[in-house]
Length: 478
Image (cartoon, rainbow, N blue to C red; front, side, top):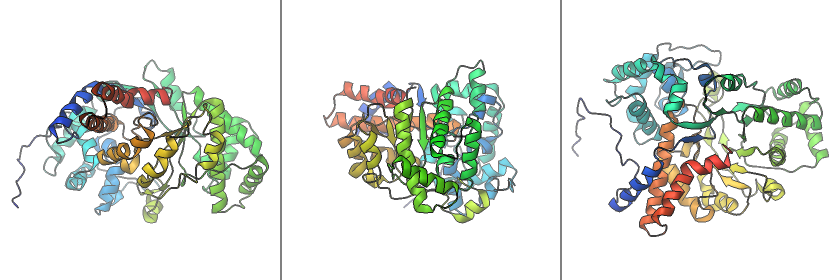
């Protein structure tokens, strides 16, 4: 096989038909559908952007700090190719940075850029480079410095500050995610500023719910302090959680989020729950107790959502910090999360039997276990009025993963038992890239239905707009 050498001055171009079918008929319909959604505002109901970016509106530091170091997709791939996290500028657990030169970090990314061929990371980053920063040359070792300099030059300008990009990206609403004890100072700063961008918080109470976490009892004590509630009792604990939910709602929250190892739910009676809680405060619980308490609290949070209207999101099935060496050296959440098999049929039954038929509850369930799409999740969402399916998440928010999601869930759950698209990103500049990929994949899927005469073109166009904009805005009350 003859390999064609790349042109020395080749251009970085984003093809207008990327992610559309090769079949001319489907491709033509996909183009037409995409024209209906390409310029719609972005609804971002779940993600992990740091609200300090928009509260402080300071210039981004440099290309590596913006695009490489905080991106788990990038650092995990580079780590798999033998690049140490310390060589990527990632601070150690004690805050020490071995590599302090961001340009060298960028060069390491460029050196290993072939590792990203075919990955969504490459799609997203090339979209950012081309559409946001106007880069016209592909990233490679011999172009690394030129690309770095162009991005760095942009970051020094006023129009590339976070709030200006927020407006340029056409973000209508952005939800961040904060732990239960967060004072939400950045959200207060945004709300009191003259800037009109809508940034809301999301209540993530894992730190005060997971009794297996180191420091859980101390966190619960702080919960009592900030709410003025006696959290040494189970009723007081529930009251404190309800008060924190109300505090988050006053700062714009429309949803809660729960990252549990499994999808198990439990419905304990009050006396049993109180006894388990007291044993946890005394440090007398084991792993089985922790799983039981997490599951029970999911059911309690469903009850609270029926009362206060917050959307309940569940993100289960990730084995966090699988790599002990990385966890020991660099702390939690450093990209070593691994999907695990997840049982939804048995796990969710206690919660769904108590609240799944309640019209007041909106329960959005995600998965990292694709084997459950058609066997468990779509049938559950296709039956229980309260349950909706979150989009393909984490390892599966790729073009293939998004396509598999539609193929395996639509026949049972349809489109309208799903919630559209959540970018679920920490990388602020990638938000429009991720939404564009999702919109293109949905349009390609709908185009196939049109060409196969399973859906009229006008209904496909309406559905495309619903998935991209109307559904997430309605479900998350944004």
